[in-house]
Amino acid sequence: MPEEKSRKDILSENLKKYLDANGFTEKEAALKIGVCPTTFNSWTRRISYPRECNLSKMAEFFHIPTENLTESSLVADQRKRYLTIGASDVLNYYGTDKTFQKWCDLGLKFRREGRLERYFSELIKEK
Image (cartoon, rainbow, N blue to C red):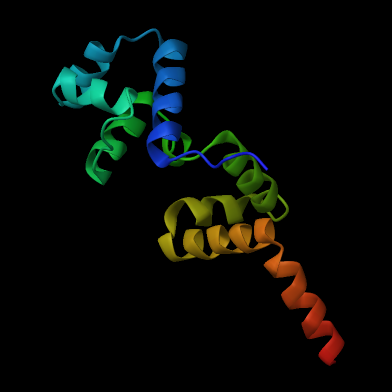
């Protein structure tokens, strides 16, 4: 089984991806979001992790949801698959309600761990 990446690794990879895709240097991005270029560089080199407010500024700068910076593509793809089962208003609700996001994330985590299937199979057996 592959080793899980740390949140610093995931952020670093995603930052580099969005910098390249948008043609910005680290220094340009840092100045646009209002942080010191050396601070931004420490995020891309996996030395430190930004505060929530700086994650929000970066997401706004790249015009993406914060999750695109903080999650691996595998988790993001699983979330999309899980959420697109329902109507599009579910996606809108997910984007605005933090409690709903937590429940969805918890459901995905349990599904990855196989706990969700075990729970429901035991529930069905009881009936």
